[in-house]
Length: 311
Image 1 (spheres, one colour):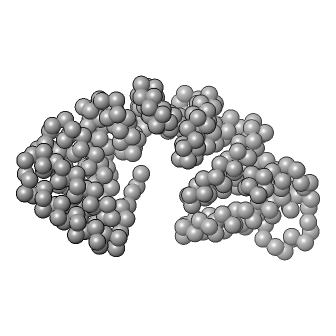
Image 2 (tube, helix red, strand yellow; image 1 turned 120 degrees about the vertical axis):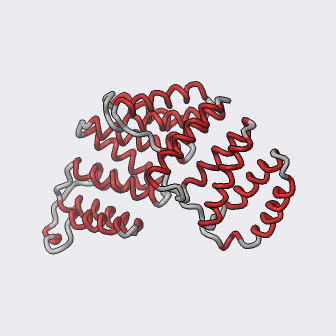
Image 3 (tube, helix red, strand yellow; image 1 turned 90 degrees about the horizontal axis):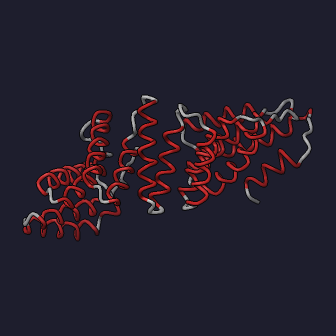
């Protein structure tokens, strides 16, 4: 049975009855606290079980207010999504939105619609995601801190649908909103806007956005952090497409050096890109050497670590 049907059965269809036998047992607050504690240790499956038990205990206590149920459902959405259980997270989201609307909390309803849009986009339900983002934006005040992220989400949907002019407009609105709120765009947001610009053929703008993302990450994480390799790779390939081979080679070499330092599983992709750039620069001997390395690396790369990501 789907998660939202279970929750509806417990909190909407089933009668709420107190039980004196629970007096000596754990309360729903205990389960919620246990959920927080397990979150600290990253035991997400245990958190989900604790929160689900919390919902059941809350119902049995006979004191299930809409606000209490909503609080637990919001946590279940996050925990389910963190485990890749997007279908369950969407089910919980649908029920949570109903509870938020019942208590007439427009802010929480809007945030739930925005997170629902993120989940729907994650699983490729772009039409539904667009509708969820639109509903969130109608409820969010202009100066709300969640508004820029919601606009970014909508822009990503438009970009995925190849509605590039619309995507560009929403990305611009998101950046303007962040400026108004004195918020710093994240490197991930800048990178996604850059990817959209690249698809539009606005390579110069895309390069500028990637450079800004790289600058922010270098300031926050240091110049040798593994996250930088992806940004350096994107920047190098954009520069290569523009014919800026010297800068492209420099940035790609740096990306490869970070891959070697942190033993990335996808190092062959980076080596291949560097080989392509070297060929374009007529450095065929080194390019051939890299191709040979790729063949050797393919036999052992499965033993290496996966690429870490902060975004």
